[in-house]
Image 1 (cartoon, rainbow, N blue to C red):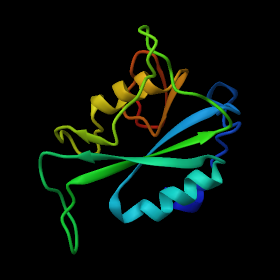
Image 2 (cartoon, helix red, strand yellow):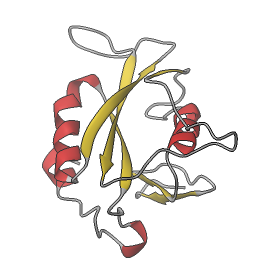
Image 3 (spheres, helix red, strand yellow):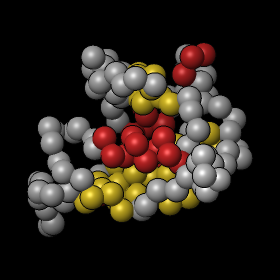
Image 4 (cartoon, rainbow, N blue to C red):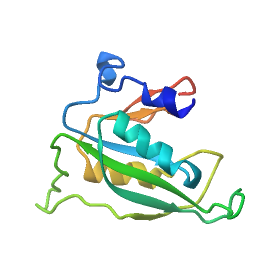
Length: 144
């Protein structure tokens, strides 16, 4: 999809089941070339940018001036949704650097999903999903 089409997705009421809450976290994947577009999408969906998580891959990929070995996840917040608190009373936190192996084309590392579940309370939804994962809703025409 083109960026303007993604911006127009009605995440606040796309399907009642998939409605983004007034208080929500967003983890938005982007490549280096589409960083500006991702920030545009985040703003269109009414999320405030907070930080960026970088996935450092074990193998180099394609590119023009520079060959990509990173992807990024922009983290944004809508409303006031705090981080989770772990059973030991400490806050659930992640790192802004995720080092994980690259696998199949476009497949994101499971370690990112695990970090999301430590930091952010559910329910969880993956847009443009390729696989269905227990405990997550999946939206996308490639979801198996």
